[in-house]
Image 1 (tube, rainbow, N blue to C red):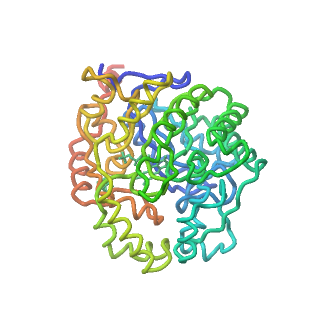
Image 2 (cartoon, rainbow, N blue to C red; image 1 turned 90 degrees about the horizontal axis):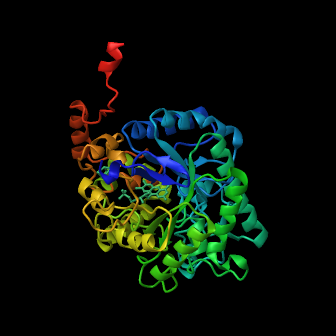
Image 3 (cartoon, rainbow, N blue to C red; image 1 turned 135 degrees about the vertical axis):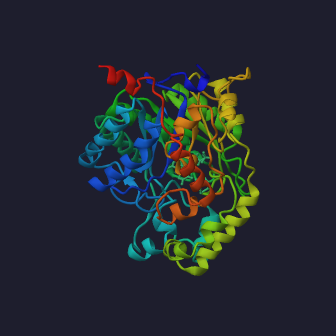
Length: 445
Ligand SMILES: Cc1cc2nc3c(=O)[nH]c(=O)nc-3n(C[C@H](O)[C@H](O)[C@H](O)COP(=O)(O)O)c2cc1C
Ligand code: SF4
């Protein structure tokens, strides 16, 4: 058995192997059976293909606001969350595990940047940890963003943490095996952790305190369920950002979270902004040029001029970030030396050999206890079967899927050569799994 196939324990739950599908916004919607259908359609094939653990992408804990992108899923309503038992049952039928990632966008909410949303709800405000940084205020004055911050009082911070706890409780009642926290991608948890955003002078001036209170709320409502979080360092911020989470401070945070009682950690090197540091890869020229997507971009980004401005920013950023497979591996390895809980690695992994290497199969000390991929599951929803057979993922990190997804279009691979390659493999049954319990034994009965 290779390291990838070996089971691993997270907070008392045994995950059947070390491969996970990283959290990706499914934009499945919320509140009705269609949302449940969309989540089952997206996540069941992945589990069926043998992936040990799937993370449902960022799902919002409040009744209104907090969406980072259109059509996200909310977890605040116990009646709706109970219906998601159909999803957790589907995952469990294939012996996989499913954790949901709980989130709130804070400043990074639709009311800040989404053209149509801002027109429809001109009075909606963004929850803020402190007065927003100067760069965002300047963009607001230039009419590029629409900043309407509501700075949380101490009591409101406790209330928000309680909402994370309540959603976790509903999720566990619906059969989810664990809880993940969206603490990167410029969401509100990163804003608490980051000195760029957090200038508070109450107890939450220490951002880890927020994660401590969320931990306690999750324990109150969901008991000893496995609880993990991303641990961001802001090493990839633009040069003008002076206050940022350093590596040293990220390591300290990881140790404190281990002591507080978090059951696993996902260390990530990001920027203070929601940018391409999260999804390193090529500039998506095909996606920006697609005639059928222009109106979606204009609706989302607030007109043709602003859509072109976002495109330009995207082009500049694509040059900025290197694309090493496993770009978080070095930080993961450092965290892993300091904590006792499992460490999860994601970011740019595509080759099976890299997965093995980072899990320590080549004799090096492991960088991580589990390895995950995100975009490759757009290209190959049933990728687990091929990876576990020793093959590499097809995804070329070209990012043609990401811009349409942010603009509210379905998340799927949009690069024809990759789509065709996937279809050819499907024709050859490359995504069928040999589970060992073959049909032969059934026919003998
Ligand atoms: C379309 C898209 C949506 C994402 N949504 C989330 C999310 O909801 N929560 C999160 O923590 N990360 C999110 N990520 C980041 C991924 O989890 C992952 O860290 C990143 O894509 C790098 O992995 P990859 O190179 O395998 O794609 C998203 C990435 C993409 C491309
Ligand atoms: S468009 Fe396809 S190949 Fe390109 S990053 Fe997305 S999933 Fe990967």
